[in-house]
Image (tube, rainbow, N blue to C red; front, top):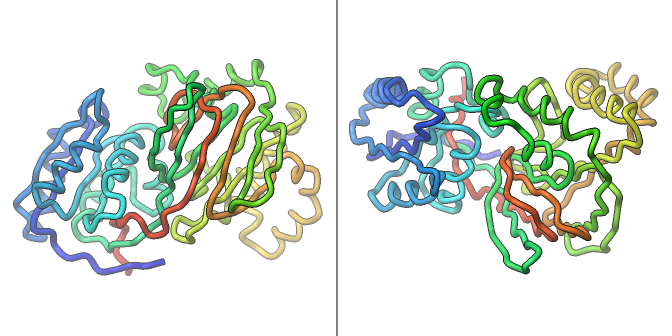
Length: 330
């Protein structure tokens, strides 16, 4: 992990989603935090339906901004990060919306706007990995997109596609639970071909396969406990439950074993004695590159947003490709 003490930027920019944030409140909090470190030059750029933040971030960089604050949900953070990949400018997150996935994984508070603004202007700077996904659709067209937390093919992508927008606005990440209950009865196993680091291609019938840059989710879910945001690796979770009981075993593992038991020596002994059954339901792999193929087009998601259907995805990691603000070391 690389951390550096932050310096006050000469110019900052705020790329914000007007649907997700109260812009007057954000403007007041940002101006106050910036003023405490002597930053007065702030550029304000609004995202649109057509552009989630990539073009606005490039505009900010062209205008000389060295700190870009992403104010919105995970889609805004992902879009801004995509444009910042490999650049000298730094990302700061003002969390809003449903999941706040990257913010949760790097310790940025999602409960206090004032604290998030303090981290943006007075926190440390940390270099983290950024994932890159090149998708291929049924027509053979390809698209390259960045991701920060995870990419998925299978029931998770179908669940996201089934999430009701109005319920998502009202309940946040709990709306995915509603979508999950509606998706599970119709769920079918997906035959996925996968290869790690250019190695042998294997196949598996899965409910979902997830490729992650980090592993903590809302609701105290530790999906992939060993995933680190700065280890230069992608972590793969393969979910193959054989029944409803299999889903319950997975749920126990990601909410109890991964998050609680594994933190103590006694807990790890309990896991070794009791978790044999779940190992066939949920397994983990790790690599620098992952190639996925499916027999028929399947829904694909990145960081909790749907990105259509794919027949193949090539995923790689860009080590240290993004610089972000994190809480200052005590």
